[in-house]
Amino acid sequence: MLDKPLVSVIFRDIKKEGSVFRITAVLVSALLVAPAPGALADLVKKTKSGICHPPASSYYDRTKNYKPFNSVESCLAAGGRLPKGMGGQQTDKASASVTIASNNTGYERSKFGHGWDDSDGDCQDSRAEALIAQSSTTVRFADERRCRVVTGRWISPFTGKVIQNASDIDIDHVVPLKWAWNHGANTWSRAKREKFANDPVNLWSVELSLNRQKGARGPEEWLPPAGKCQYVSRFLRITKIYGLDPSQIESQRHQQRLAEHCSR
Image (cartoon, rainbow, N blue to C red; front, side):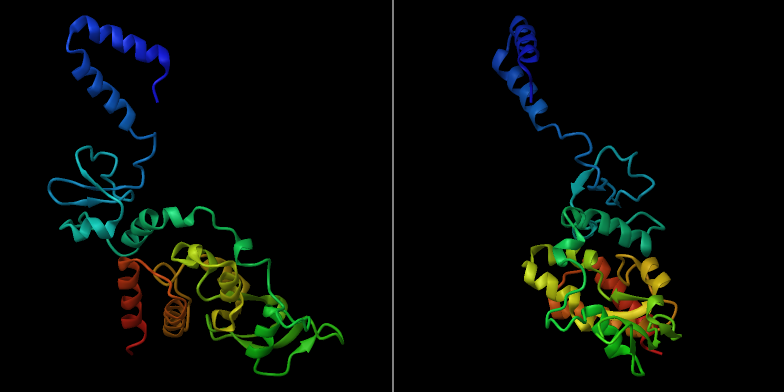
């Protein structure tokens, strides 16, 4: 927005030169519609030659004459193509950085509830109940209250290895909460988000290190060392149950993962 001194200087200069109304309109409109610094940072740039340059492209900053698009998908749908040699994870990341940026804003773990829920009030929260259900032997509790699980026998779906101490286990959200937020959970009610965060279908007992390595990534970016088919299949089943909406490129990558790991 123009401040008053700047407006008066422009007006005096234009008045001396004539064509007051025409030139004033051009200058004011140009200044008012100028984007804020960084406003175009996440746009996909389509050149006259039809190449879609997402922010990850090495030519992105050098591309000055272009038609802007809000996503890689919309640029490709308009007849564009990706830069030579750009594909796979680069494409996934470029698409994700553009298409989910607005959803990503505002994510907090607390929007899916404050930690593990104990909906039936028996002192065994969702973590404890997952450990009990997924142990191949009777679990041992910390004390006679039977609230906290300390030992059992779990076979990690990420490695196939046996884990016997509950302290070595993280309960993994197969579909991470942040991934879900970025793909539609941001529009859910709080009750639905809490249900999702504690749904046994979405909970797996896995190694601490692998769960933290995975972070908030989906199978388009990360796969476990073992059990890849089982993991991708479960992930897609959950996204379908909850109506989560991966991008076109993410969906293509998911189908590639299924073809690679589930057709043997």
